[in-house]
Image (tube, rainbow, N blue to C red):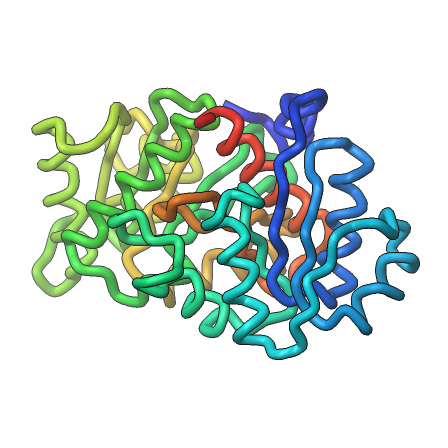
Length: 301
């Protein structure tokens, strides 16, 4: 369990740097995050994109001028070349730069040259929320739009396995819905009940999985008590599974915009860690996502 991102940054200090391949790297916020990661000593980078734009930006960002740059002004080709560097073993982590998510993921998901592992891919976002005691993880607010029950099972499995790789061996998992009462009129509640039944049969890696649970119960033990709900995860949830992308997107925006949370987003289920924060994310958020990817890579390796 991590109280904040600083604990993760402290944990990876002194570890061998991983090499990050950045797709369409002519992005000042990405380069700012890389500068912070370089200063902490946990990454090296290969930058793929428009060399004529990237080179002067390195100086502005204060990054070493000898960082390798692969010149490719075409956005789609730059994404493909960045993926290829990871696939060929020249980098261990892939990072999204100034490129549309659909273009980026097309390169990642290429059946011939991508980073498919045979698993479903999903986004996993970590939040440091002011006033809360621990980091909160949430999935999947970014890739799978309206996942089926089978897809939710895969998303949950990927996410629990990732948490275990970063030393959260038995996470508390909450299955988000609008209500704790299972009703066929609320498909999210039906799926949540099915996932809990799967958990009771040992389908998932070790975890405490409960649902359906509304967000107030997930966040506060007092809300569970007030509703007469006995819960082992209320008030101490590590991971929330959202029912669909719309719900997930709303929760992410609410936490970052209103609660002023710092968010770090990665993609799990691929052959290598993928940093895929929003293009509008702050350098701090991108730095924390890089730290998560590095931690996952070194813990797995």
